[in-house]
Length: 247
Image (cartoon, rainbow, N blue to C red; front, side, top):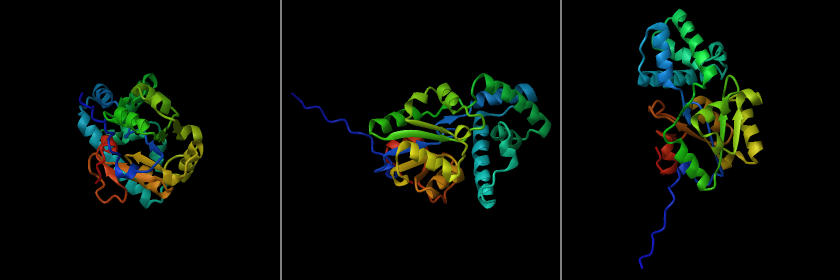
């Protein structure tokens, strides 16, 4: 009788070797905006047609520029990032909407968001990565900056809210990334030391560098290769976390 070959576990990314927990950013990392809905709203309200791909790239470019600007200004948060749906407002403006049209579009965006969370598209690799990390014994958690305290609604809409050991919503705990306080709070709740923990996010300044400054292993999700000079390990997709790739 032939013996069965052992099933080999996927090899974890080198930055995850020896850690006890992997913490994730939510928006832009595990979950993404409903770009088709956001595109449809712009067309219905302002008569402008934006393709999903160009909206996604504009979003990533906006975050890159914001990271550079906030680092230069000592991580002081720009005033326009304190208003509702500021990320989408910046994207629409970058794509050429004027201020008046943008205001009308954002009004409809807010109404749509109240009906169903706009960050409702799960990353294609998220489920298998989260399940594999947990299968290999890692604690899995989320730290997310939110404007309205609805992290759980976003994860519910994506069908992944039950996969985490801890969810930390900035609006509910009173601290925001890149503030070290939100990382300290999370580690205290998990009972872990910084060097036992990795943090994965798509913002170089607020995720990867902020985590690194707090002693965690910061990993940058950089699908568009916008940060070639990153001092943190980079991945092009979440799937690289469980196939051992390194760049």
